[in-house]
Length: 189
Image 1: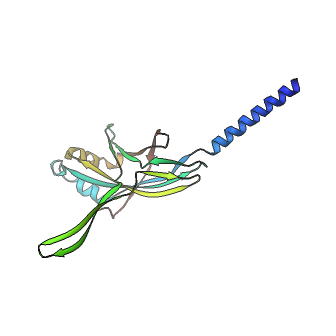
Image 2: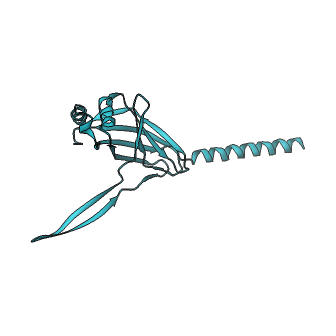
């Protein structure tokens, strides 16, 4: 009876370990291999030299280049990440990526009349990654400031700002990924 019980316990343990390892291998395990913030240094310099009144209703464009890798064998998805900008005093500003754009095509120009076609191009709101899959993308973010004082605070403290990507995974869990690298890009203006 003891030998039978020992064999049964060993079978249960090895079966449980096998199920756990299989479950672990088939999970979705997202890794941000790189997240690089791109900005226009000349725009920061030029706008930062203006007064707060001149900066009312200001827009400031940023880009984030992402390199994602699903290290697991299971598939999954995430939302396209929101960008959180944090000032040293604790103030935070969260912005969603630009995932659609309005396009216009002029069809016919006549005397005193122009016909055109307008449509919205949508780029999707999430990424799906198969097992061991990769995804590279560049996301555009537009920071909008109604008050010029907020824009001026961002521009004068730009080097000390912290940038974080926030997203929901396929299970609805919110995750955060800090951006550690900033690069200057001269083509945003």
